[in-house]
Length: 535
Image (cartoon, rainbow, N blue to C red; front, side, top):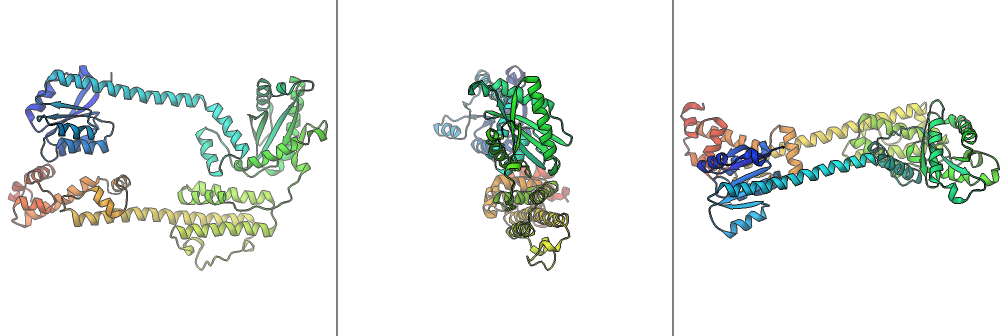
């Protein structure tokens, strides 16, 4: 049985010793990990030891039990708190309940009562553990459901119900690979003469056709994903090159003939136009559906390619809002490889569309304009990104080829990625320096807290605490204590001020607590430090 961790806080040593000796911790499923003689010390120990249960007295020096519970409710929200009190005071009990205290025990404490409390707390902790295990069971069921989720993902992809910036994230979540490149959608219609419409949609038949294509499709340089899609089978075909579309049609014809020979099933396939990536498969699927609509007119044709019937003469490629979001996301928050991938994908679409020079130039200018807006939004100098003397006037004729143009765009994006990343790092450093300056001015204020500092900095305490710890290597509390102790040591060495005055000048309203912290920090009391041991 896993034992739970207990922290005991009481300013009376006799009570601490009595509790630690009289309780059979192991048989109750606990072990005592630490003891504290005041609330401030208990708070520090709790941050280090992360106890499951905190037993604390109400009345303690430096920080009382209720304040300790209030602090722990923020830092250890899952911990169970038990409060001791020697005063039969309803107000204490009311406040304790407000702090999320689990149990309230009147002194003197007897072992049977505390045993009962600990038994109840262990049951609650066990229940929480079971709930966590239930979450693991849910995760296992999720993994068992992955095949269904993958089919649903492919269906939504073909329906165009996924945003472009969601596709790769969803694919990674479902452990699918969707490489950038040329994709084509194929819809498979099952022809069963003399059978009813219901039989045509028989799920077992569709499963057989789906598995048959997955097993028998063989074409070098290509990959196929076969799925159930509405009342048909859909093939998502990855091509390494645009000119593989007609070899693909030949391979599909071979598999259709094999299906008829081995399974006795006649298939009609609608093939959509090749597209520039997974995010455009819905457009190819629309073409495949349109191709199937020609099956009555085409008679015995097994393979119907929409490109042979409705060639694409539009030759237009707008730079859409989705394109801008994807580009901005890669430059602002992505990796170098992601930036290159996005630029490569955009330029591949230009090549595949075989745009006229004017249409290609418009697409290029829209990309450059988008990058200029991102640079200005991020506070970056345009010349730092595009080079000295850049005025925004750039022409596609300035480049020898699309490869040169792609290289220039990639270089600009990576430079902007570097500038924005450096600004984020500089911003974090400046924030911490501002915090240090505030502490240097206000360390003598006994009310100095991370909340008051964050109000000054206009930041959330949670974000600031993480940022400060990352940049300085210590917590806000530890840093403030170090500054106060350094100043106290200086005053003790250089002045004859009374200890209680030095305590006030360094942010401590309680001289006894000041002496306690000072001795813990330097190993000697303030008087001995002044006497020469701290010099």
